[in-house]
Length: 432
Image 1: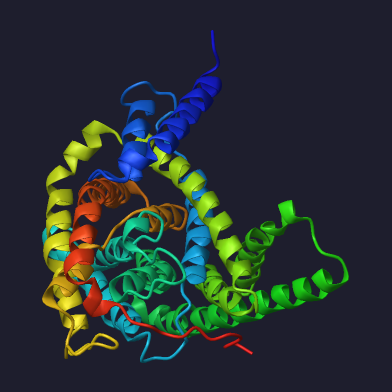
Image 2: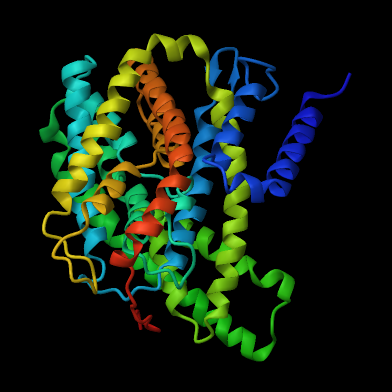
């Protein structure tokens, strides 16, 4: 009898071959690669063939899921940073600031209210649900992100920078929910949360992202002058930058996701030769795509029909409110008075604001935060409730956003892109 592991390898290899050779056709369809991976993952999971299982004796391996999704997210946010060549000036990053400072807290609070009023949760559980579902995903949103380093489109820039940052900046709210689960007397830990989880961790994440990345670039430049590295190995510098930045930041209790995103920005600006970060970006994106396949396959293998149906009405309520009301209204509020760069318009076109509101894609980041919460106090019936609402929300996001991304972005490109495109000179060594 053939080992199940060998069958898994065969199926994954066949899947990669199929989507690669058929990518030219798939790209033209209202269909995302993630949706294909999800369907295959469901077929491989316990509901159908049972070839991939994260559950052994009904015990869910949350630690494995956390480590896999953690790796995918840090590579993805570094990729986001590498794509952005826009100078670090508040005026040029205004849309990002609004999406992070206003939209993300609005989303978390609104989801917490939904959890408290309609899902029978206490405030700690509801805030944790909001924090898990609030961040948009940098992994599954490639179709709506910046296409390359020459792309200055305001919609794509906003979605790319938002995805790169809010996967890190949702962490304080996740910690808030976890602390509140452990101790419902907020006075016992609130000051520590402000000082450590909010101020210290964010500040250290930014500083470490700059320092570690600049140090690696400096060392590399000095060594390359003496003896050039093997061309086949050179792209691994990007992976080493990601891993060193993340691990060193976590060692000093900073937010590693934030540090890695900042490191991507630093690397993009630290080479006189623009081909260097472009080569790293291409390599990182290839690794990211491969890890995306594995992560979405695992998501599909997690899904079980019975618990999804048990929480279907609650999940449907969250999905409808989040996708059709909370995110769009939050974007509308956050972009009030925001003027597109180099445009005669005084505010964003309503169609552009609507697209910002629609493309709040949920995915691997939410999976990571869910797995992290399971490892830090989330358990029992409320754990199952939050988990299945999260899984279902991600599945629906993969489907509806995956199907709508291609036609909507083509419509945007034909009708609105000229109003949000701008020419912004890239600057070198901004961090020196």
